[in-house]
Figure: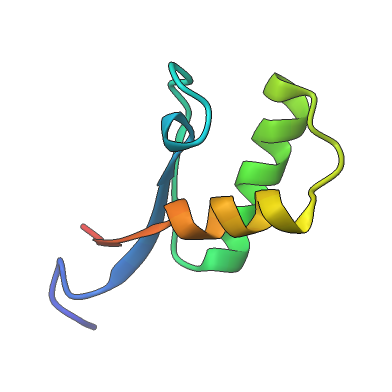
Amino acid sequence: MPAPGTNIDKYIACAALVPDCPFEATAPTEEELLKMVAAHAAHTHRITEVTPELAAKVKAAIQNRPSD
């Protein structure tokens, strides 16, 4: 098993896209993170259609973070 901090998680803060939104999410993969972001966007921001432009902005806001 790898030592703590050697795995990389994917992280996003919604505030990078929607000012003042406190939502943050971390997941082991980009795919899992995008599912969380899509659920948040639909529920909180009522965004049900993801345009290519929005998808590009979301992907650009994703950061790599060492996992615990």
